[in-house]
Every structure is written in C-alpha cells, then in structure tokens.
Length: 422
Ligand code: GDP
Ligand code: IMO
Ligand code: MG
Image (spheres, rainbow, N blue to C red):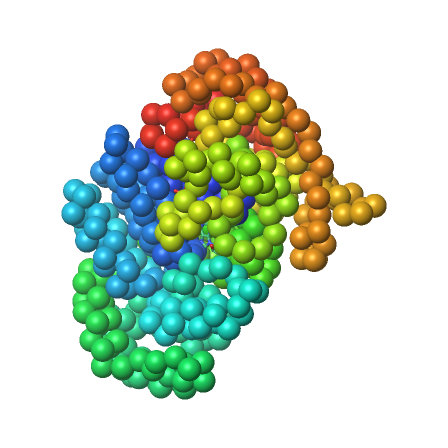
C-alpha cells in the first residue's frame, strides 16, 4: 500500500472513517496528525456502530498499530472516556495505541473560551464543536500550551497548570463566566495523565523507523480541505492544517516518505457549522435528513447539504496533491430524477473556475450547474463497477474528471463490504 495520506476533499464528514477502515486492511500503522475530538469518524462493523474522535479508526482491526501524532490536540479526559467506551464495545486498546509526547493538551479553559467567544460573536459565530480546539491551537502558536509530556510529569504539570488557570480565570471573569478551580482541574487531569502514561511515546522516532522498514503507514486526516486554517473559508474553519501537508508536520514523517494522497468526497456536499456553501440546497437537505442521514457524528447537528461542487473538489486536488479519489454516499442520490454538479461560480459578470478567497465574494457566488440524469435505482447492493447503473457510472466518471484525479473507490453504504474498488 505504501505510505498514504487520506484527506477530506470537502467540508469534513466525507466518510473518511469508512474509507480508512477499508484501507486499513493493507496498513501497519494508522496515524492521526491534526485536529482533536472535534472529529467524528463513523465505522460500521456489521450492525455495530463505532464513532472515533481521537483514536485512529484503525484501532478496530486487530494487529494494527495506531498513533495519535504530535499535531493533534488531546483532551485527556475525552481520550480516557473514548478508550473506555471502545473497551466496553469489545475493542482492545493497549500496546496498539501510542500517543505523541509532544501533542498539545485541550484543557477546560479552552472549552470554556471556545464557548464564550462564540456567544460573544452572536450571529457571526463560527459554529464550532465547542471542544476547545481553537483556543488550544491558539496556546500552541502563542507558545503557552501544555503538552502530553507535561501531563505525565506531576511537578511540571502542577506548575504550568497553576499559571494557566490564573491567567485564564482573568479572561473568563472578563467574559462574565465562572472561574475554574485549580485543584479540581488539576486532580481530574492528573488522574487522566496517569491513565494515559503507558501510551505516551516518542512517536516521531517510532514512525520514521517504521517508514525505513517499509511498513505501510496510513495518515488519517480529520475535518476537510475547506476547514483548513490556511486553505479553507477563513474564519469559518478549524484551527489546524487539514490538507495533506498537515500529515507531515503533524507526524514528523517527511514529505519524501509519502507515496500517495487519497481524497475522500461525498457524491454531494455537506457542511456543519457556519460559513459559505455555494451549492447549498434545501430540497437535498430535506431528502437526506428525511432518510435519517447527515446528522453530525460529534454534535448531532443537522448537516447543511447541497449538490456536488467540482470547483471546490478541483481546488482540493490542487492543494492536497490528490492522486486517487474515494467517492462515498453515492446511494444518497439513488432516488433523484436529475442531479446537478457545480462546474463554476458566477458573481454578477464574473465567472470563477476556482474558489475566490474573498469571503464576501464567495458568499455571493451562484453556482453554474451541469445536469446529469438520475439512475433511480438502489445502488447499495453493487460490489463491482459493472454492477452500478450506467447513469451512475457516467455521473461518477464526470465528477472524478472534473475533480482531476483517478477514481479508485466508490462507497454505496456505510458498511465495510458496501464498497467498490476500481
Ligand atoms: P468522517 O468524519 O469523514 O469520517 O465522516 P462521518 O462519519 O462524520 O460522516 C459520514 C457518514 O456517512 C457516517 O454516518 C457514515 O456511516 C456514512 N457513510 C459513509 N459512507 C457511506 C455510504 O457510502 N453510504 C451511506 N449510506 N453512508 C455512508
Ligand atoms: P470530521 O473529522 C465536519 C467544523 C465545525 C465548525 C468548524 C470549527 O468528522 O470530518 P472547531 O470545533 O473545529 O473549532 O469548529 O469546523 N468541524 C467539522 N465539520 N467534520 C469535522 O470533523 C469537523 N471538525 C470541525 O462544525 O464549522
Ligand atoms: Mg465526521
């Protein structure tokens, strides 16, 4: 399989968890490199549903090693709870999980600040997951963050946390929010530190040694291209580099060890949270929500939905260097008579075949659509390319061509076996 970076090519929730689970069969290591428990990656094994937030989805296959890399921000209590939940579901989490000692921590003041900033912004809010992600990455960039290595060193943790609680209580008071008790936070997080200590390691050295021994490493992206802090629809983004480069900085594995980039995209578009979504369409949202689909895996919020946006996915191919495409949720379009694909944006007399950076312009842009006839046939039983309705094949070929990468996987249902490899 070689070393593969898997990224979301849209606004997150593309079905990365499902595709990671399929590709993990060929992998030795599965590595998360950015984001935190704002992610929610759904994997079905038979009828059993697993939602992974910080633990790489590879944990569900015995014999695989999973790494939470240095670029991830870790809520220690959230992680302990996730490990316990997985254990209850019968998943073994022991020496198969490693946590980078230099990954930064998400602490209660980050979550509280996330919430307070959103309240203050009012109608201009980002619509974050309220997991404290922005403030935690903010501390990392400001060089005032705490890391896993601090959490497992009681003396160091106490000293650094005392200062941070003092500092942040001043800020929380200014927001009119309740200050935090140092002792309560300290005791709860030290206990989580003791639980997590056996997993903590120098994962940069481990992964580079693995890369030298020809191990297959799969980098599990979180969020999606248009939530990237640099390349997304700023400020309606998350706080990490969700694009392919983030896999290198967030793991310490250099670019010349990477062999391919797989972009995951839905056969339509979804977004959860605020910010522009040029192809948004209420009828598609009603259709998908009516089927019980497209509710956030982390927050349960209904996702906004729209037609496939090939301007966006084409841009994603460029900034990620996507070689191969996995298209998921094809079955979501099974009942439509006509299917639209956005091939350009129009703003007055201006036509764009790229995503404009000016948010005001992007928000005004109207999609230019090409129409495709629907196939009006259930696709979820197809296991081979030839078993798909011809009109579905035409549609898939067209969106892959417009996106500019090779179609290698089509997903027609949430389960592992509901997958077509080309
Ligand atoms: P991720 O964050 O990219 O891993 O995606 P999520 O798990 O948040 O959301 C994707 C949703 O689509 C989940 O509920 C998956 O079970 C589901 N899913 C993935 N692929 C398919 C598919 O091909 N068909 C259907 N019906 N559901 C799918
Ligand atoms: P996965 O990995 C979809 C969105 C939030 C919000 C914005 C900022 O499951 O694809 P944050 O809490 O990160 O500060 O929120 O980013 N967001 C996601 N949307 N899927 C995700 O992860 C997301 N993680 C964050 O809804 O709009
Ligand atoms: Mg998700």
